[in-house]
Image (cartoon, rainbow, N blue to C red; front, top):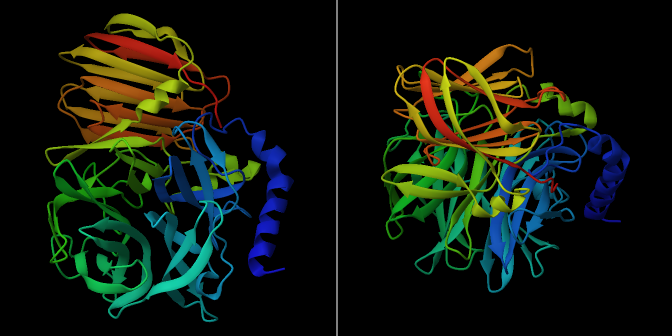
Length: 483
């Protein structure tokens, strides 16, 4: 039996061993993607290929900690109903023996190409990294072609997460990197055939551009054209908190600018966080046959009290965000849940016109463990507005301070913690609540807050309160369980 076959057999054993324990957890989500066992992190290889959406992911099936990662694999026809496929990549070869790390997918001559980072640690725990290729004719079984890029001079072995795209009859690849001076950077390669790759330049970060000294590592880069401009999404590490910004251990965000494929240069503006919540990292995008730019992200952050989640005792950890559609308005990205998620709604909406004036109200049928809530036509001239979710999270908007706050009870110690952003006004909010997650889209997705939370089983109420008169319209849907 080969190393690959041995690892696959071990995964099958692990799934069978812990299936019952995992499924008994009341915090298993109803309509989000989760690992069948073990730990899930970065989305990888997100693509629509031959009419099917493929989402691969970093997977440690043997424990709820990190280690030699596999590529898990989900497929879907509609972005709502997903099938968990067999393992796509195992860390079975010398160039990946300590993990098949993150990467991307592209179609070439009718085949599916996966690019990923092979992680290697030698006897002295020194790291090596290789950018590797695997190909498939059926999208399920993959043949490994080995490394196509080795580490260039001037960088540490923290050199990973290749994202590949085609433009002007050439292929480009961006890679997250750390310079030998311990500065975060994104580098660019190009190729004519997807196998022979040539170094172009450091695209941003390092010792050049507007992102010099902007943290010590850039992860998960993704450069794409959207609404007439070029957007670079990436996840910097090592930023210090700055007011309401950069409050998590690591961040995820974007710049907007112009990429010149002939010169291999990218001129851009400042970095903006994509999500203001507690749990959002390593986003990856793709385009589909409707021309939409779609995004998934990991609903967590590395090194942020990961081992304190209550799901660990049930042998699983972490989830993906909902799939989102991106639009660029000016130099700002807007995120919206994909329209297909409306198919989760069970029956018609419960609709209510609400007028509150310094009191608390539970809106009719605004409760449960899995629901969608739309608050629109908000009229709030003074004071504050708040929405409390299952006694475990609270959304507050202050019209005087022009500040939106998301509070939750910490799953570490129960202490209330918060994330905030400036918001000039509230037009609407759209809220997706699952058994242990919240995704809040403010003003048609101008600001987004994503978080895990862990209410008690008995707590299902949603209440509204205001300090002064406030008028709004509420629509509420119960959402189906599909996972």
